[in-house]
Image 1 (cartoon, rainbow, N blue to C red):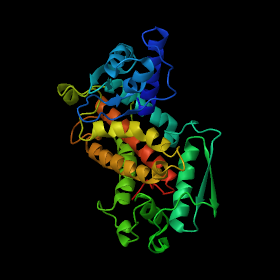
Image 2: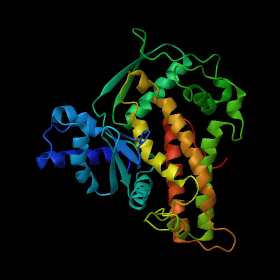
Image 3: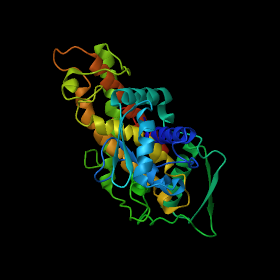
Image 4: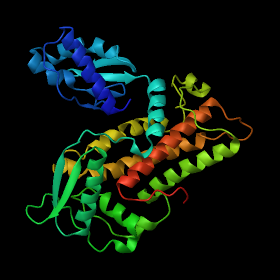
Length: 345
């Protein structure tokens, strides 16, 4: 279950509480779901009880207590704890949600995370005649387009997108490295136009992302040579079961990998508030997200294939499906940045 899907689940719980007369409020159009804060627990947390306390005329803790039983009975939710002034901390059934997430990604392919949430909306970006501003506007248009909206790019008038300019011509880096050099830093940070972006080693963030993608393609080819393919139904790996971890996670980095894959739609949607400064930072947010996803993917890959005389198992097939899903999201994210994702490096 992605944060976007969980937000809809929370809204459904609120609507049920209102329909049952347990809560007297107008159901809000949206709620915020994110990682638990300090003192929190579970997989995600929401401040919906604090949001509804004033219109309900009740303390946030009371609203949270009213909503808790409605959330607990939602599909995929295994537990809800109340912390702090009234935060609802939600634990999910990872065996079910991880498998469903992988299936969804593999079914949707590079379109995973795309919605029509901004359908019919047009955003105007006025940019100076400067290469970094042009590239940033292009990626913002791609991200907004992934949510069904449209961006019109204009010059002159009141500029509303003015990133710190590139200190020199990035063209010698080549199209991919040049775009990365201008997109990875936040708009208010000065980009580095150096040959470091061309180095083929782990110190280069762009290389790590493209290498992680290429490795997911390589393990799929290697698995086919060994006679097995990806499977997306929930399985329990014996080693993982001993640790109390459902599904094939039990490999280093896997829980982070699943969470990052689930968070991808939210990252894409973060460009939907143009021309607000937070939305203007969406391309750099996407680049950082892809880097974190690449690192988690690389931590997951060593356990995907059988070793020595080990035979391919259900766990290997599920791990392979997760790796292929990660590769799909990495390729889709790089595409939105206008950067190529080669299958071989």
